[in-house]
View 1: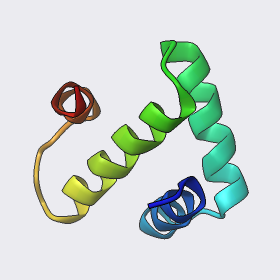
View 2: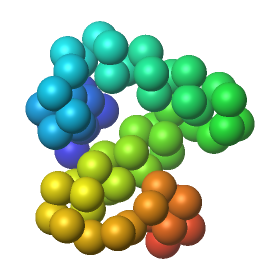
View 3: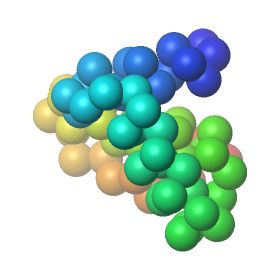
View 4: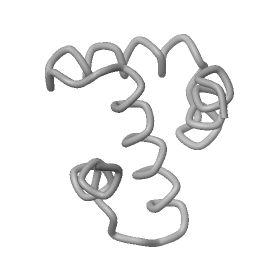
Length: 66
């Protein structure tokens, strides 16, 4: 899945437009010191888990990715 597709999917899950989601991920990635792609993947996994009723946190999904 390309970055654009992931951004669209995440934007749909959280209910914001793609531009806002992209800006917030960029800010979060700069603060936490990880790459944009890793922050995007972590947030997407966390939102999908939240949607499915799981209690998977962002840190857990980031650890699982490694």
